[in-house]
Length: 130
Image 1 (cartoon, one colour):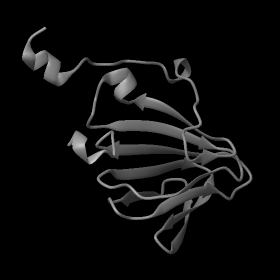
Image 2 (cartoon, one colour; image 1 turned 90 degrees about the vertical axis):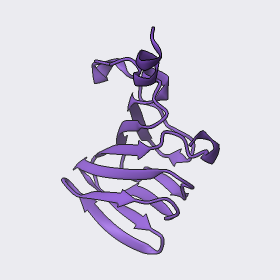
Image 3 (tube, rainbow, N blue to C red; image 1 turned 120 degrees about the vertical axis):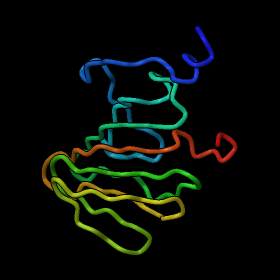
Image 4 (cartoon, rainbow, N blue to C red; image 1 turned 180 degrees about the vertical axis):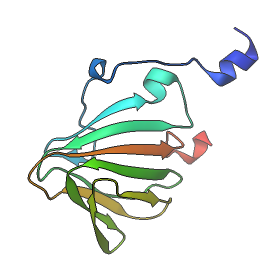
């Protein structure tokens, strides 16, 4: 493999059904995600792309990223997203950009599953990785 091939990584084509649901640290009550394109299956340190499904009342606790930027895009359901001290009702086709340094959490306040995509860059919040 040439240096250029190593830098580019390997392409990935996958079926979502093959990937396991996982409850990551800081996620509670059935806040599950599948790592669609993440370091473990792509080798990328630049991007983490997940689909998440939160059961009613499930949530990710309030947290802050040092360097990571995130985009959440809601596919179905509804929930309350907090950004610092502001609360936002999020529903299908709503999205948010969360820059580094903003405290945030997301809770399913609906009666059915809250399903959304999460794009995070870089893949790690460790400043030394940049």
